[in-house]
Amino acid sequence: MGIINRLKSTFKNATKVSRVKMITDRGNGFYAWDGKLYKSDIVRACIRPRVKAIGKLVPKHIRNGPDGMKINPEPYIRFLLEEPNPYMSGQMLQEKVATQLALNSNAFILIVRDENGYPTELYPIPCLTAEAIYDGSGNLYLKFYYRNGKTGTFPYSDIIHLRDDYNNNDIFGDPPGEALTSLMEVVGTIDQGMVKAIKNSGVIRWLLQFQQSLRPEDIEKNVKQFADTYLSIESDTFGVAGVDAKAEATQIEPKDYVPNAAQTDRTTERIYSFFNTNKKIVQSSYNEDEWISYYEARIEPDAMQMSAEYTRKLFTRRERGFGNKIIFEASSLQYASMKTKLDLVQFVDRGMMTPNEVRAIMNLAPIEGGDTPIRRLDTAPITEGENE
Image 1 (tube, helix red, strand yellow):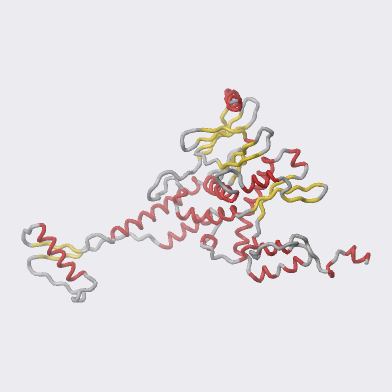
Image 2 (cartoon, rainbow, N blue to C red):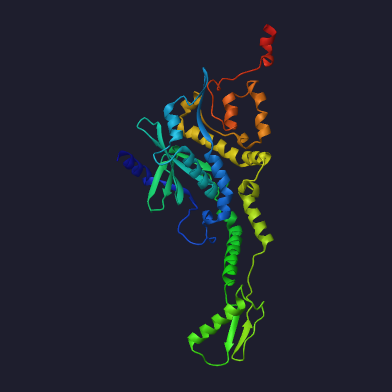
């Protein structure tokens, strides 16, 4: 209750400075462009490679001190990165945050701390709207509006905030909705046109006009007989129809709307370009060089931003001064060709990589002693050679 009372008293004279509306997936049914980006199969296909690649990033706590570099020296930080909260693993948290970042250019993670100020849990914040407000002392807070109608306000120092297209607003990234509006309207029109064309393929093709009044059951019987005799695939009449004077058969040609394939491809290509991807990445048909280009252009900037935000929000300035930081490690060589992977052996015998690092790239289990760098005798440092 003490924290709640302090927050209430803090915001008595608070001033709202900016707001961002998030794009969320609400409701069910056929997708048509009305702001729900995640309901589009094209958009979901565009962001899925990015989301999965960010989920595969391995977070590590690094400490560069007088005794050298140590990896994951604090167990509580390692557990926090592996299991951020009771409901999801670190991979699931990273994927959920990456999805929000791709759809909204903003993603938020709440840091829950203990009574001593140490982080204990991390929670993604799937909000509808976020507001930036300042209290009377100039401290920044974010107020979130949730789907259930409730709100939550937290200090900005307890929020890991990831941003894309950081341009117009001082706090938030620019959401992609406005830039995608015209493209998504074209996609929605094409999709609806295809649905209508499929429906029109089942309309009436023939009209039988009887010259005398018949009972409904007789009309149905004659129509069925005509269809079975002349429209059936197994008909013996070879497409030739004949009717007596009691009825007149008229063929009806429906005018179907079939979307232009070239126009559809151009629109899809523009959406791919907007999300920094392409058809090969979406369909997982890329080669080694194409994946490395995508990784460096799309995944690596996200990894760098996550590293910087996690570091400055999880550690104090004093802790960062002692060399503590969070990195998100990934090997773009996971998608390298077998020849490239085999060429890595020259990095092992020169001490640039350990045997276990190469085995990880080859999707092999680590071996005992494989974390120790090794070096060939003919590649010793120059100073050692001169002494000998």
